[in-house]
Each structure stands twice: as C-alpha cells, then as structure tokens.
Image (cartoon, rainbow, N blue to C red; front, side, top):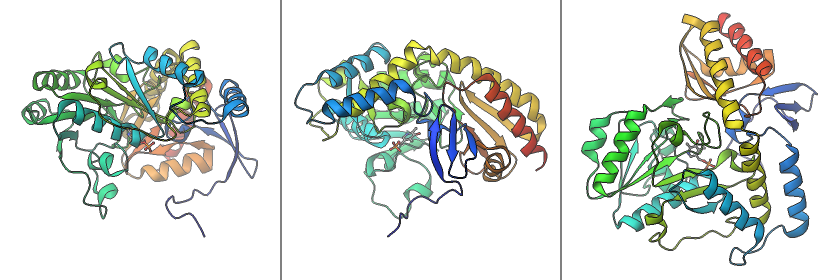
Length: 377
Ligand SMILES: *Cc1c(COP(=O)(O)O)cnc(C)c1O
C-alpha cells in the first residue's frame, strides 16, 4: 500500500529546528517556504513544543461541549488578535473547513445563496471551497461541485460592483492571491468590495489562510489594506504546523450562523499550540519583523535579479518572483545547489513564505542564491 496523492520530493526530511530542516543524509536546508507558511515560528519552537507536550499529558482531547480553559483562552486570544469588529470565532481543522464554515455562515445569515469568488483564486479542496477555486486542474473530474458560485476578475472593480446584487450571500477574496501566483490586491479593490457588499447586504469574506498571522507585516492583510471584512478565515501557520482553522466573524453573522459543528474543533492539544503560536507572534512583534525583512528581501531581489526576471512582488514575507520560464527548475536548483527550500506558485512564480523568525543573513543568502540560479538559466 502506498500514498498516492502527493508526488514525493527527492529529499527525505528527518528533523527541523528554527529555519533549518535536516535530511536523512545529514544535509541541512534553509526552509524558505515553511511548508506553505505553516511554521511561522520555525520548527520545534520551544513555546509550542512545551505547550503541546504539557497539554497532551494533561488532557489530550475532550468533546467540545465540555468547557475547558485552554479552548476558552484560545477563543479569547483569537478575538483579541483579529480586527476589532470580528468578535466571534469558530475553530476547525484546516483552511478548507474554515472557508466551508464561512460560506455556510454567510448563506445562513443572509438567507441567500450566491457566492462570488475571484478568477485565479484558491480556497481549498472540499466541494464548497473547491467551487470557489478557479483553476481547472483542481476542479476537473470532481463535478458537480457546490452550486451558486460565480467568478469575477480579481482587481476589476466595475465587474465586481456589477456582479454583487441582492441575491449575493458573500464575496470571497484572498487579499493577496497565494496559489494564484502571489498577486496582491490594490487596497482600492478591497475597498470597492467592502462598499459593494455593504450596499447589497452581503458578507465580505477575506481568506487570510496564507496571508494571515503576521506574514504581510501586520497580523492580517486586512489591517494593512484598512478594510475589515465580515468574515476572516485563517489556518496554515495559526498553530505552527498543527491542524487548525479559524473562521472569525462579526456579530451579525454570529447571531444567525445556523447549525454547524466539527468533532475536533478547538481540541485541547491543538488549542494549546494555537495559543502558544499567537502569543509568540504577538509578543515578539513578528509582524513588524516580517515587514522589515520583507522590504529588505524584495529590494535586494530586485537589485540582484534586475531584468533577468519579470517581476518581484508581494507583501512582507510573502514574496513571489515571476521568472521568464520554469519556476520548478529554479525551485529545484535552489534546493539541490544551495540547500534552500522554496515553493512554486503556478508555472512561472517562485514563492517564498519563510518562517517569520528568519534572519537578515538568511534573507541575504537566499537573494545571492537566486542570483546564481537565475543567471545560469
Ligand atoms: C492553503 C490554502 C487554503 C486551503 O487550506 P487547507 O488547510 O489546505 O485546506 C485555502 N485558502 C488559501 C488562501 C490557502 O493558501
């Protein structure tokens, strides 16, 4: 019997510490992808390791209907760190589930069914989130997906305004498209989405599963853009590598959200990891660090690479380099020749989502390596 979904990489990882992953060969790799932004504090961060170990030994799990301090603490912290009017939250186990909940809550609270998503969007692989995901490679062969979904062009204000009407339950947007190729939305587009949904009585959902938890230089990309959605979803890095999703909502959504649930929601061990992660991100001011190092990274990449690439873009430590051809080749050469792990985002974008604790020296090493692998193209 063998696993058949992921295509295996030619490196077998044995351990991780901070920004370093070590292979069975003993070779150390600089982890500039953080396994898709899932380890903002780096690997084996002592605060998280201790929180998980203590909690697992005390109470690994109990059904969600028994109140426990560790879950209550996390809910309190989540409402504290999410933008102000998002005072209620629901915990789940992954990004796609956080979005499924967002879609269900928005439909129930508005009594409408239509969901508008963006071309090029990625929101997950269950049948509701997949219906909001654009690319055929994720959708083909799995139809029928959930119904009632339409797409508009990302960043096209007038198309969006024309599409939002009194049948619209929600508009769902990634403030920076991740899988779609690191495409930051202009704040004006997000403002237009806010206005259009307000006028129509629809919910605005920001999928911050990749942008959230400090990556863009603020805790949330929504704050950076100055636009507050009705629902914000997070996952990936929120428990530093343990499975957790968050759907944070405003009062009007929470009070008419319908019947929803999930067995493992806010389970004690995962909750302990989430609290340790969010406290550390906040207390060590990692969003500000991400902002500073992200600026250094992008500036240096532009200087180093110049016209050899099409564009360097992103916010904070969510950075994409659009190459002229073959992002996969660049990612492979970075790994095999420079022991730096990056990620592709589509065929032509090399993506960096390093742990937020990455150092200036590690950023500089990555820039130099990019200069090397791109020059020899
Ligand atoms: C990864 C991702 C998801 C899906 O999260 P899973 O935990 O894989 O289900 C949804 N939206 C965005 C923006 C993502 O980056």
